[in-house]
Image 1 (spheres, rainbow, N blue to C red):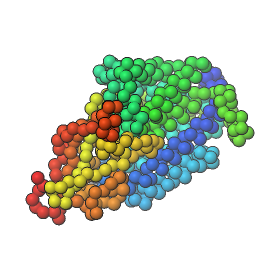
Image 2 (cartoon, rainbow, N blue to C red; image 1 turned 90 degrees about the horizontal axis):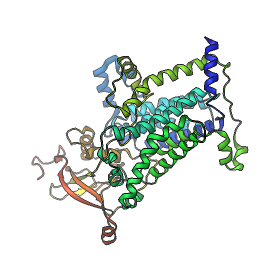
Image 3 (tube, rainbow, N blue to C red; image 1 turned 90 degrees about the vertical axis):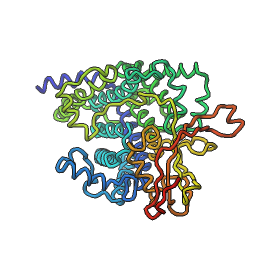
Image 4 (cartoon, rainbow, N blue to C red; image 1 turned 120 degrees about the horizontal axis):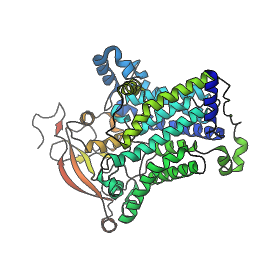
Length: 499
């Protein structure tokens, strides 16, 4: 048994030349990304899920506990079962921020990675709608794998990181064609994407003005990079380097045309593991090399046989769960065997192995919700958000790598109905109450105290053209579509409803 295992490990070592420096760079980048994620959350968490926030996590966990009883811990594994008050939410964010700093400087890597994984998993589960994004689960999955990257570098773990990057990119590309979206199949997705993406910034306005033939070429380039280049990951150089270069190019272009918080940075960090040390030694300035620590070598096949066995079992489980997801991204009609589904269900609460598929359906219009308040039900004033479109003259803002999660969710709410978007109903109630924690998430509160009435209107927003912007100075133009919500009033308001 041990001889066979040694042969397998020796075979895998053939794929791993020398990635010690790549590992060191990746962990430093991961520490920075974790730090960005926790810092972004610490300034929002009370308004989003705090005691007086939009979706209080205490209410959420109480409801789940009543419904699931003893299974609640297993289905929602979060430390906030012990305490979910504001001070605990802030404490976990602060602890994660401290651990990310320690990881960045290379101090106590293994304990920090374990702490970071538990902390971010707990916050993601507690965050409900506000931490339901694919980059959140990508960070959890990446952080979990990184726990096994400390110490001697195992080629099994390195291959699992390559497999994660392959799945992320290939699934995101394959679903664009397999889901039947006409904009991707006809190469017209970028005709609307820059305008309709959740939080465009100023460069997106200019990108939207580019000729249509350039937009089509860009869509074709995206599909080639996401569907074809991931297969180069598992080929020897220079093919693996070509894959890294193409993926880096895509992430840079996405970064310069949209606000996607830490997603681009995390994908770039994963790409760093495709580059072996001989390349890094040529790319990095010579002045930095003396400051680098001694690079850990790849573990020998004969050393730590139990650890190698753990790595191989981990690889087998990940492959069993994720391979059907990859196949279904390209061939949705393929069914997953029942035993595999049961294994997926068992692992799913921990977000250890996830499926991906960014922008599988391109949004072709931009409905936008504008919230208005009134003291008399006749004269209405608008609430201004920090980053989402509202004021027509306000240029789209650059905000990455910070993610203003309320602004992001407002984009999703506009694509749904008021009745089905429970968190938005809670937002209006909090605004009627004048919750300070929620108001801090906004740019402008038009009243000294809470309004007596509140409502939400739905508009269709479009970028202005070059000529329109030159004439009016506006970045946006809009058309009223109607009411998004009924008019709500405070309990102490007059009995008659607003017109």
